[in-house]
Image 1: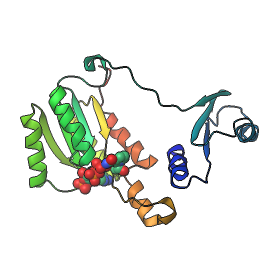
Image 2 (image 1 turned 180 degrees about the horizontal axis):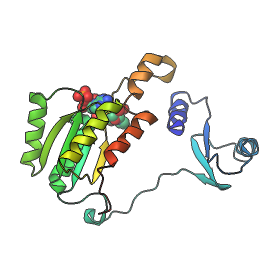
Image 3 (image 1 turned 135 degrees about the vertical axis):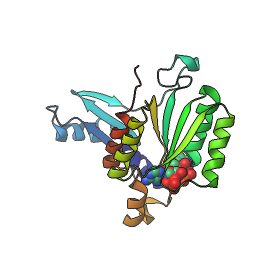
Image 4 (image 1 turned 120 degrees about the horizontal axis):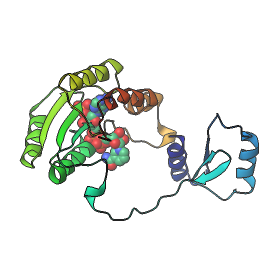
Length: 209
Ligand SMILES: NC(=O)c1ccc[n+]([C@@H]2O[C@H](COP(=O)([O-])OP(=O)(O)OC[C@H]3O[C@@H](n4cnc5c(N)ncnc54)[C@H](OP(=O)(O)O)[C@@H]3O)[C@@H](O)[C@H]2O)c1
């Protein structure tokens, strides 16, 4: 997460050169020596995300994936069941449409707002594409709400093949102009604790079956 923040900050202000260094606190490493090494030997490495794992230095790079047959993937399967948090939103619905069209998936769209005509239309659209789809109201930023959602899925014997986490809100501004209120709002569905709550959902996951 901090790597992404550093990258954004450096894009917003090119005078800032940042490098984020990750390490496992369980590893017996000399953090000061590593920082020193990064600032000297690797000092021309803006936008780098580095991590040390058992004293081995790894740099994060983006590589193109080989084009492969969509059916060779483990995660996406025909008629698979996928829960999409924020599934009725912009990104979520793109994934939902894709999964409906290409995999005739069973889709569970999750959002905070009560079921409305707009949700109904989206569900109909997915059904027309050959999918089974339903909307469930739940706030993934709220632990109790997530527990209830997970219990409801288990009660209905719904086994998920995947959870796609698209819930979030956008309140874009340059970091220098960000207020803590805006930050808190945006981070609500993304922050670590919230994401850990997604764990409850993953209890319903049957990815490897
Ligand atoms: N769009 C992009 O190009 C882009 C690029 C990179 C990253 N992102 C990130 O991806 C996320 C989604 O973007 P988007 O463009 O799809 O936004 P969007 O159209 O506003 O959709 C967000 C969806 O998330 C739901 N949601 C928000 N908070 C929730 C919560 N606590 N629990 C459950 N559902 C929640 C909203 O529904 P309710 O209001 O009903 O809850 C809404 O349907 C954002 O966090 C954004 O930062 C977007």
